Image 1 (tube, helix red, strand yellow):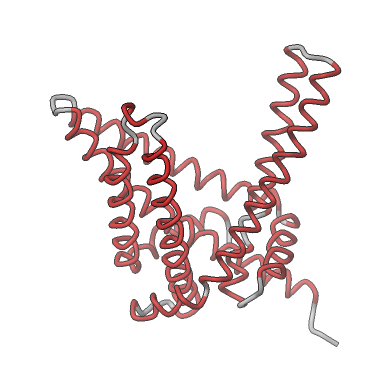
Image 2 (spheres, helix red, strand yellow):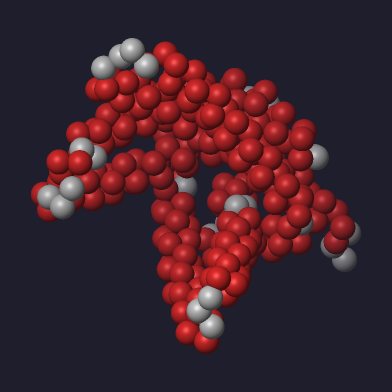
Length: 261
């Protein structure tokens, strides 16, 4: 499956997951509306507000993992059979919860380790020569390494759902497959990001025109609701496209190895 075909499938197949998109939309709206008063400039530095924000973030993070597992399970069914049953959403959410949680925690540890290494690298280079050239060089190196890390870590979650892999095995297979097809996966990722940015810009421009005469508080609510819709739809499209591409690459890798002897 080619990159463009994967993106087309992402948009065309997303229509069968409108109920899932609606669930994510409701969660995003709730998160957005709850966050509005907490994000007020008047609350900056308030330890009580900071504690509430942290607790809410943890709660929403836990809910997101469950919804992610349910959505991924249905997307897998959609790719393999062409159909999906909403009644399977909750069982899938429960089934993959711990594995997805473990994977996300592993990502956090990888990110922390990477930040530490890059911080040491950057401070070492700048200690030797702190000028515009070295500052730019460090920034470019950090950006490239961050992008490469994102690309090679795109697929493990699909390995968990498609092959019921454990976390370490999923990371191993997903990163190997992404690395072996790095430029293709990078192309798909950048295309999806570009489409996402363009959609967000167009909708943001239109909402900006509509909300000009409205009070600030009303504008915030409208923007929150519209952003929630975009943030619920686009990730599902990306999920479908990436999983479909992973399936195609995985089949190609298996075929290239030939039959087992």
